[in-house]
Length: 327
Image (spheres, rainbow, N blue to C red):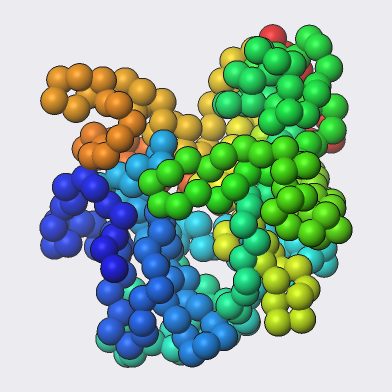
C-alpha cells in the first residue's frame, strides 16, 4: 500500500538520525498508512500502531517530517490513556510493541508505537469544544451556532464556552475532509443509546483533561476522540488522544479573547502554510504541499516538546481554576 505522501520527500539518508518518515516492517502485514500512523496486523486480534514523524495540515501530508514527533505523540497519548483510564477502557494491551517485530525492526518501533486491541471502529470523530476557535468561530459569527449547537450572543474568537459542547463529525477517507454532523444525524449512524454514551464520555474525558491541563499552564480549547467496540460490544477509547495533532493547545499565560492565541499544536504550521507559495502562487491546499523550511519543522517540534514537558513535568502546579478573559 502506498503512503499518503504526495510531496517530494527527502532521501532517508538525508533525514536527522532517529527520524521516521514511514516504517517498513517485513515481519508483519501492513494494514494501512494514515496521515501519521502506520498500522500492522498482529495476528487476528491486535494492531501495531507506529507513529511516524509525518505531519499533515489541511488534510495534506507534508513531504518533510517533524523530527521526533512520533515519539512525542506516543508519550503524550500514553500519558493521557493512563490518567483517564478510570473513565472508559482503552485499546492498549499492555504488551511491549518491540516484542512483536523482528530484531532488525526494533529501532523503527521503539518509543513510537502502541500494541493495541483490534476493535470495530465507530464511524465518527467525537469532537468536544470548550472554546470558540477555527471553523466553530466562523460558523458562530454567521449563525450564532457551532455545528448547529446554539450558543449565547456576545462571544468572541477564543471565548471560553459556558459548557463544553459535543460536535460529532464523520471520519473522512484519506485526503478528504471530516464533515460536521448534528447529534440527530449521529443517531442515524449509530444506536441512539450508544450515541448518548459516546457524548457523555467524550465530554467527561475532555473536562477532566482540560481541568488538569490548566494546572500545568495549558488550555485545551478543543479535541477529538475515537471509539470502537470490542467483542463484547463494550465501548473502548482508541487511536490517539489529547495530543497536539488532535487538539488545540494554548498557553494559559498568553491567552486572550478576541484573536487567535499562540499555540503548541499544528496551528503554527497552518499559519505558515497560509503564506506559502507553490510555483510562485499561493498554495491551494491541495497536494503537493510546499516544502517545509528547516526552521518551520524545528519550531513545530519545539512546540510539541514544550506541551509534553509542561503536561508531564512533576513541578509545581499552576492555579488554572479560572481562565481570565482579556480582550
